[in-house]
Amino acid sequence: MSPTASSIIISSLATGTIITASSYHWLMAWVGLEINTLAIIPLISKKHHPRATEASTKYFLTQAAASALILFSSTMNAQQTGTWDITQLTTTQSNTLLSMALAMKLGLAPAHFWLPEVLQGSTMTTALIISTWQKLAPLSLLYMTANNLPTTLLLILGALSALVGGWGGLNQTQLRKIMAFSSIAHLGWITTISFLLTNIMTTNLIIYIIMTTTMFSTLILSNLKTIKDTTTMSITSPAQTIMMAMTLLSLGGLPPLSGFIPKWLILEELTNQNLIPMAFLMTMAALLSLFFYLRLMYTTTMTLAPNTTTSPHKWRFTQHKPTTLTSLTTPLTLLLLPATPMLT
Image 1 (spheres, rainbow, N blue to C red):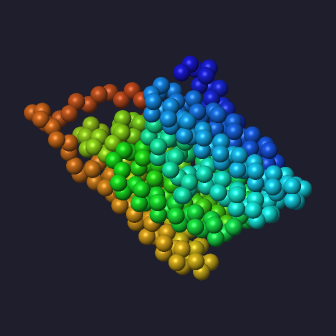
Image 2: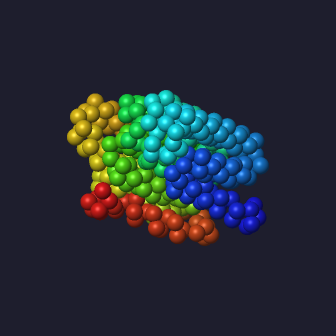
Image 3: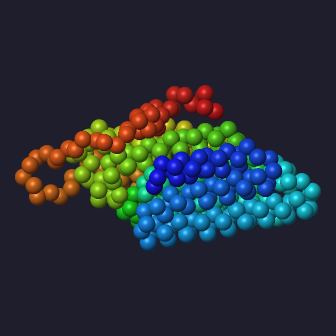
């Protein structure tokens, strides 16, 4: 892709998200979402492979349907209340429609089926953008409307996403699909807390983006695609292997790593609000996710690929890919726990 095309696409992605996040009028929010969707399509389909074309088609159809639902719910609200203000979404039908539309946009269960397929058909870099940047616009709408949305529906979507994210990842061997189910589970946690405390929701989102960026940038640097590929990693780059193992534990939410912060705060708030069964369900769902993170960590650090060579060392090629992003996000993925009071 030419530098001009790349710069136009990247700036359109940024512009779409900023328009949606900074708008108070539903039509402007919709325009931002559409710009966002149309800008990512060329990035998904640039491999010129049937699977990439299929992924971009699935992504476009899902996002277009979700955007239409958002427009429909805001039009219904405007017809009944006479206002297009995002924060004044008061009619029950509009709120329910918007909740389902945002679930489709974010890939929350039961509208999650497109996410693993789209990530699998994309390059690792595009998968990183879809898993992180593309979530910001819908989540900004969720942030602004969370007080009006039906709480029971949000709790159901959150719990279902956490469970599906855990169960779905158990049977996967492709790393992009594992990261897709990881994304579904994390967004379930974000949705669960959205109507209770938006500051914890924001903290959870920031930590999720940092952890996912670290994980994807490690996979890009090591050129890993499947679980089988991770068995060679300990020989070729021992330091990176340790960092990846720690990142996986952080994604699983184990203390004293950064991934523990959102789970701790969310479970505490759910308990304070007397939502004990919900807190229990989310904890059990987190164990499902933790299992496949631990399995991935095990294959990365404790297994060796079968090789027939007589040489005890594998060739180590000079790393030509930039490591700046990984260097910035890895410390934040592992060491943010002491800063918890400042984050909330």
